[in-house]
Length: 116
Image 1 (cartoon, rainbow, N blue to C red):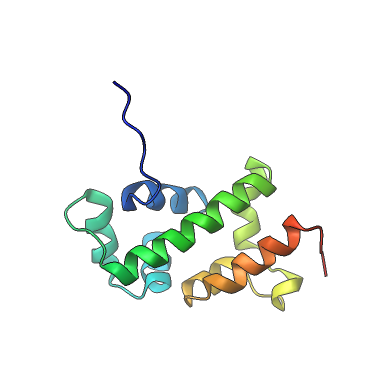
Image 2: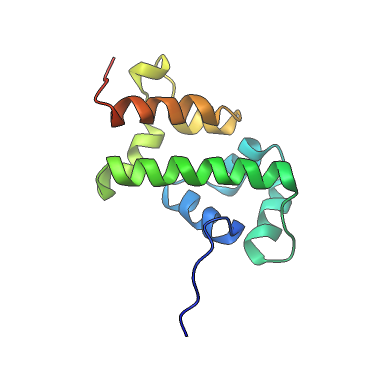
């Protein structure tokens, strides 16, 4: 029997974050937790609280949208390059400040063909 992957599984979401080049410290900043906490989630030794799970779910939405809109070889570099729509800031920097909505909004603009 094949196990259905739960999209809200923290380990699954954290793997997607790693695919974007988001390291442990950046994720911890983004989620407003200690890097050791993220490490315990990755290892399955702990589960995020409700606020952490909501933030992880937002990261998963960002990953899914970016993966759908950007070619695989551009996915990681897009998150680490300055973006004019973000005032020259890198999406990864905004994520590290916990500004997930702004990154999601820029991806939404790309989805609708708005390149500002």
